[in-house]
Amino acid sequence: MTLKVKNTLSGKKEEFKPIKDNHVGMYVCGPTVYDFGHLGHGRSAVVFDIIRKYLKYKGYDVTYVSNYTDIDDKMINRANKEGITVKQLAEKIIPEYQEDYGQLKIDKPDTQPKATQYIPQMIELIKKLIEKGYAYELEDGVYYEVEKFAHYGKLSGQNQDELKAGARIEKDDKKRHPHDFVLWKKAKPDEPSWPSPWGEGRPGWHIECSAMSMDLLGETFDIHGGGMDLIFPHHEDEIAQSEAATGKSYVKYWLHNGFITINNEKMSKSLGNFFTLKEIFAKYNPNTVRYMIIGTHYRSPINFSHELLDQSENALSRIKDFLINLKNYKNETSKSSPALKKTLENAIKDFEKRMDDDFDTAGGLGALYNLIKEVNILMKNGDLAETDKEKIETTLKKIDSVLCILPEVETSVNPEVENAIKARTDARKNKDFALADKIRKDLESQGIILEDTPQGTIWKKV
Image 1 (cartoon, rainbow, N blue to C red):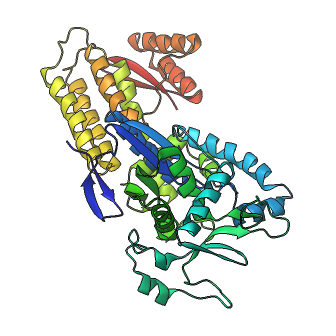
Image 2: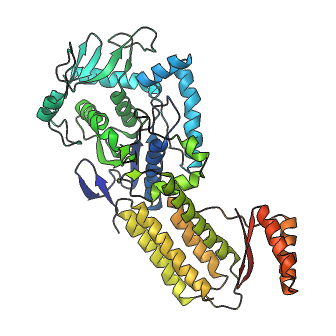
Image 3: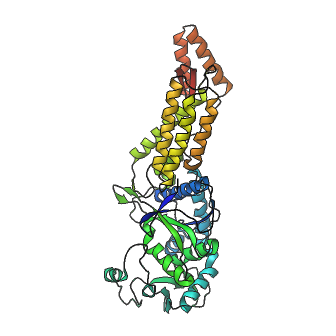
């Protein structure tokens, strides 16, 4: 089946065709590293990690770039508050993001540029925009003139007249249009700055992503991603400045993930209604958080609650029970089930069908659950041979190479526990149920739960 993606630029699902044969260039806006990452950052990172993993699953060669914004007003304000430099703040926060994202099983991008590493490229881009008549200089900086770009608003669906009518013009604002945006901010006292043709200063936010993405992926690339809150003005401004500078189409497919909301209101630091990833990880396994995120289609909002995390935790617990039962399944005399081959083939087909439909991870999870349900029936009826377990595990691993949510199942316990389980089995055979019950309770206090099945006693750690 052909992969289709919902392109924000067209507003339609489109067949995915990379610009260069089998290679995909992908850029995702990363965090501004002035504070710890919150759940909204985690969602965006998980979403595009899954998209990248599925593109690789489909056989594409993917170059994935995600940046760190390490210079802007928030960075400066926080650094001043903490009495450290902006550079020191970035060096403190970036490893925290890397640790949190690692716990969410997010693969590292191929390149993670910092905005401050690309100042020369930003200056060159701004010079080009001035030369082509798209930018102008004022006392406080260099601005992009949105009215010069005929297609301004094409991503967000807004036209220039509506933008002008709806904008608030600040007092003494010398900009030619209320939505003209800053490309270069001239230096203020005690702020980080770099030399430029327009004097000491620093880049505006929007120019950073254009310079980094085009330098690393080329003037036109396949996928640009980020949260829906970035569509306007950030991504709209990126398009305007990039296409004005190069005369080429900037990005082929724009993909945007939905918000995480609290009581249907967007989670954000500015509203103060956010949870950091570290706060959530203190109460829930990061795998539970990943599961919660992929349980909803990436474009839909997630109305966050602890109940939702509890549901995710329970779902993963059921999956773990299945994996334990599969590990412990014994049926040496059984022949391989004729139904199993079709079950495994259908699971992969269903998974790919769902994921080919604009990366429908909720549907992908559904395919996984259908497989678990079918295998459970085969195990219950004794219709699996032990040799079938490897085929099932291979299929599960293939699906999980994209989803990355299968819980780890420990395959061994220490000798003392093994001996205790054997002693309990012997006690049951000898009808010494008091001893058997005592051993079970002793093991339970150590976090080892026993379950008696037709195939024998199985254990799991909690």
